Amino acid sequence: MITTKKSQGRGRPRGFDPEQAIATAQALFQEKGYDGVGVADIGKALGITPPSFYNAFGSKAALFDKVLDRYAGSFGRFVPDALDGGGGVAEAIERVLCDAARLYARKDGIAGCLVLDGARSSGDAEAVAMTRRKMEESQALIASRIAVEAPDRADRLASIVVTALKGLSAAARDGASAEELRAFADAAAAGFRVALAQK
Image (cartoon, rainbow, N blue to C red; front, side, top):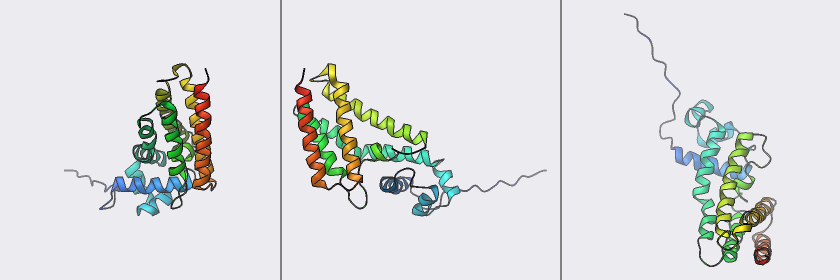
């Protein structure tokens, strides 16, 4: 009778919590951006070896995708929440911009929006495509809300709002204060009102 020895795979460490690992990775990606975080950095933060990391997540890009899903379901909820807050379109967009100014301001070493800036200058096409997809989903949601009052111009106006959000995120990462971000949000909201009123 011929027997074969079953190889022992490299599994996850005992007590490994995938959800907590994703939360830890999110903080790293928000602080340093996609390209600024290596597998070794993630492994060190999680207390696992690279083989265990790949066993758990497959790749850095696959982990980033999970992080973006978590981000959209938590921090990123402010966009749909603001849009659903009642009032007219101008009021909804003002809430989006002002909430962004408040949330994007630097706190605990983290500033800006992971979706808008996390992979902005990355050479990883897969990571860039992931953030672009999330951004397009948010823009479509904004356009849908605008279409209630301006259906023929919803896409163009939504693009303007997203451009303003990009500016807020970039400014926050560059060190703009909460007050400066709020001033920009107020100006952008006023400009949106004017654009919305135009026929």
